[in-house]
Image (cartoon, rainbow, N blue to C red; front, side, top):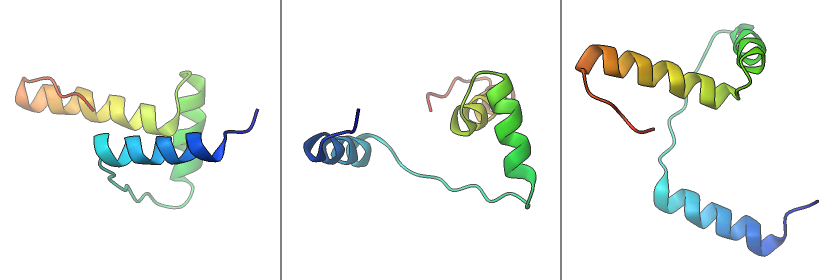
Length: 67
């Protein structure tokens, strides 16, 4: 089912108010490898990367982070 224009605008507004964006550049071919392992784990690439960052951040600082 397609998303209505009003819902699309509401989603954009919510994202602007609650999230910041951080771009990650990877070498050619790496995106496909990340997609494959993320899919295997039942996650999106974004979820997989956030999980990796959370694990590393907590190991380095001893503190949790909510991404």
